[in-house]
Length: 139
Ligand code: SF4
Ligand code: SF4
Image (cartoon, rainbow, N blue to C red; front, side):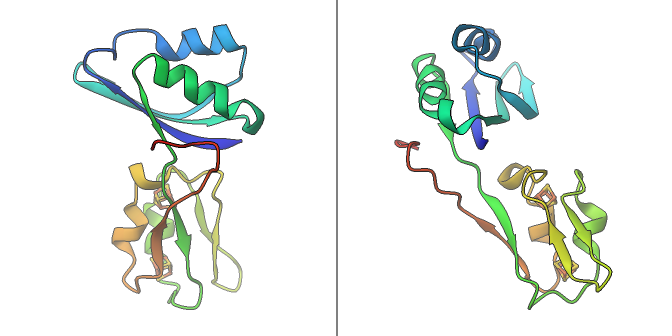
């Protein structure tokens, strides 16, 4: 699966774009988080790698912007095992191993729309990292 960030402007946010694309393309799009109000919306979703190109094209044709969200990278060398990131992560994407090293689960992390751990780390051991995906152009 590839994680993508969809943004909908005020003009199109009330349209059922995501459900229509799921039905039209018959692609299972897994919605991780969604923040939508009358001013616009943002959806973080996982899309099967083999369907990425057509999904991105479909969202863009309906006026949504599509990008690859930044995830985070943890540098265990810098980590002082304070546990702040573990306590603050809203989705339990970071845990402490028995040896007090950090275990990061990128499948759970919601990335740049959160970044709580990046701001909280006193040792600057966590940073945002851009994800690359060859088929996603015109970000
Ligand atoms: S960016 Fe947010 S979701 Fe991801 S590991 Fe950090 S606190 Fe957890
Ligand atoms: S906040 Fe930073 S120093 Fe503290 S446990 Fe997490 S990565 Fe390590």
